[in-house]
Image 1 (cartoon, chains in turn green, brown):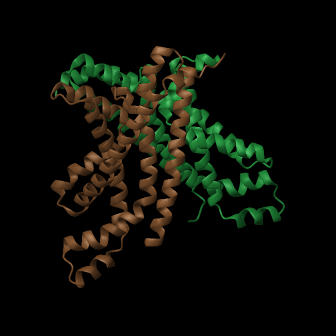
Image 2 (cartoon, rainbow over the protein chains, first blue to last red):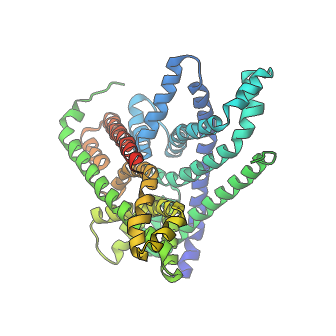
Image 3 (cartoon, rainbow over the protein chains, first blue to last red):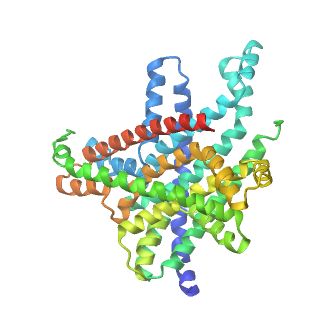
Length: 218
Length: 217
């Protein structure tokens, strides 16, 4: 192990790790809105809307993220969609994770006993008020945990963005392996950074989980 | 904005070759990761700490770092000490990655088989190893089937990542065709459709296997 080299490449990798965090946080943020919209569409009263949302989720989950990335980045210009690499990573990441997250959110909502819904409706709460005050608070715990798992997958998937030449952690690591000929040092440092990011995500998820289940008796 | 799918038809034999390569890699990696995962799980659970802690560390390492980083390390990194062909690196890298995930599942399902089964089997005269192979592992395997199926479906999608280290599977061959025909959109759409079909087939297969397994539990 060459400690001097590791200290030398540290700033480069930290900078690249920021790009990884940046891209993942943005994709998670937009992905959450896409997921919420998909959940709403899936419970729509018009069948074609439901059907459309279902097939979108099925197609996104049924094709590799890698191919989606290549399709939008290299195939996009053919349909007038020109994105710079970073934006492309965020957009594809958000639309990809949105489909997975909508399933997670829907699963959490469904897992709340339907009696809760019926009782609330018969007490005079509206559809939306029931969702907001009765169902979502109970679904929150499970929802946060499963969205947390997806956030970790999102961080790991962000490594694929290096293929469309975004200088994030994996891209930087590959470049440094090529220029320093010290694969073990570069790999262990960049792996360490992914591990730190993932454990930070896990910690945040745990905090949110505790906060969301403060008043729930389980 | 006009689409011309005729190059896709011209290069369809190339794509078929790619599908074949993808499926073959999937089969090899699938068998390797399921059998290997089971062996790793058994060793992790039933040996002394000196043996199982390094294994636990590697499972953890493979699960917390991205696949592409692992592949780059194996391909560009190990290439400086020993020369390994890309296809071997790809299959081994993907195999180890999913071996770790499968081992994690097997560890959970082996633990979930109640200890009463072990005690009953031992008191009937089975030895330690015989109990493991005839009583514990079959039950654990049946319980692992749904999650294993999910993992294998994700694994087939991840084969596309192997194109990054130059393995001639579906995506790589289509990239070659694109570099000749300059039709990225048409080719990538075709690839997406092919992957979607493979995915539907695998999901159908998964529910079939799960139904079969449920009757034998």
